[in-house]
Amino acid sequence: MAWFICTFEPEHAVEHHYFKEIHFTGNNKLIMKKIWLSILGALLLLVLFILIKTLTFKSDRSEVSKVTPVEVGDEALYRLQKAIQYKTISYSYPGKPDSTEFTGFHQYLAMAFPLIDSFLEKKVIRYSLLYKWEGSDPSLKPVALMSHMDVVPVDEGTLADWEAPPFSGEIKNGMIYGRGTMDDKVSLMAIMEAVEMLLQSGYQPARTIYLAFGHDEEIGGEQGAGAMAGYLESQGVRLDCVIDEGGLVMGGLVPGSDRSFAMINVAEKGYVSFELAITTEGGHSSMPASDNTIGSLANAITKLEANQFPYKNTPLLREQMAKMGPYYPFVQKMAFANSWLFGKQILKVLNAHTTTAPTIFNGGVKDNIIPTSASAVVNFRVMTGETTEEVLQHIINTVDDDRITVKSVANRNEPSPVSDYNSASYKTIEKTVQQLWPEMAVTPGLISGGTDTKHYQPIADNAYRFFPIRVTLSSITGFHGINEHLATENFKEIIQFYHLLIRNMNE
Ligand SMILES: [Zn+2]
Image (cartoon, rainbow, N blue to C red; front, side, top):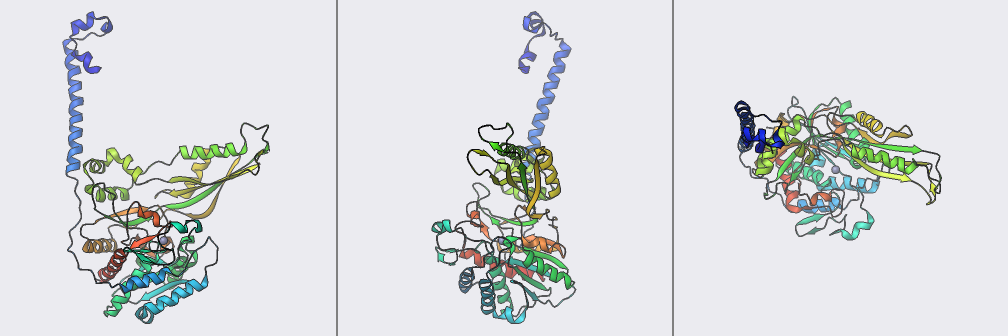
């Protein structure tokens, strides 16, 4: 419409009754034209700027030469099969671990890896295992390779949906099935395989290496990782870093490309669940009050879902965008290259905010009684830079209802510090990945779930969460889900990764 007015001759405009009030002079016309031309010019410049940013958006990765990985035999697979058969399940806290399964697993490890058993110092802390592989150079800070031997239970009702029984370790069509093939016996066994092979070849590390395998990660890790970290602290140990689960190799992220991303997660979100409870006078359902129990609590939950925490950009996320963006097709790449403009969409994809998830809702006992109480639990994963206390304040302010009480239930963990993604140890992990798989893009990242690394915070300079388990958007459901499985070839790759990583860490 604006363009239409400007193309009118001023004389006509004055005569026409719609434009009675507009008195164009030659001067005005020129000014309008200039304004529109400047707007058009600015728009063109903007488009040009976006295009240049996109076209010059290149990966800054350094090239490393490919290394031939160590050869891994099929016996490693049979040992993993056997490991999967131990039902080292963590039931809900403070459930008792099944001692037969855990000690049986310990004995199996001692038998399967005789060199580790005789050359490394072993300490059993409750059912967790801490090995120390003494380095030759005491001036180097030790590192800890972490994993956990416990697994989550299997829902009996889903047994029929498994390709193979969950504690069989059966191999079918190049896949090994069972609890622990993804989370997390797979990395425990891969670390053991790599160390045993290195010992076999007479390798001696310069840096002391701890192998720290918890037994209760799935229920918080207090008794396992917590106690092991406490023990190391009491011995005056200060670690350069811990390397644990929690990062992976993601395939299929980029539409139309088979490029995989190795995500070395350097931070994890916090974890907190709050119970919201309401008590009222209740009453008979024939005479309901306008603000009855269940409705009021439901209203509070609805308000929380409607008032989400804002998305946040951080230096880590900017780094992640810089590392991942160059590999995307043009349109997505344009968004990554111009995050100042399209940042919100990307942050949404990266889930870069404190998330709100109602998980439990309880209330009512009979169809014709308005209950006197109801309660609900909402789980939050707290974004780096925020605190669980801020989440509590957000609930109180958003719900704004004095009748509703709020209290923290279950585990409560603040977001982790962000580990240094420019440190020598980070670069070593990155280099190891690139030496084995030169085509893989490597990026630091933030993980929404929690790991045992939190227990090592007081004694480790950095915590990195990564081992090269290959997943896609569909297979990732195997973590804690049905049909947990892994390609047998991938297990061999994970062993090759640890084998090279240990050597690289000691260069
Ligand atoms: Zn795990």
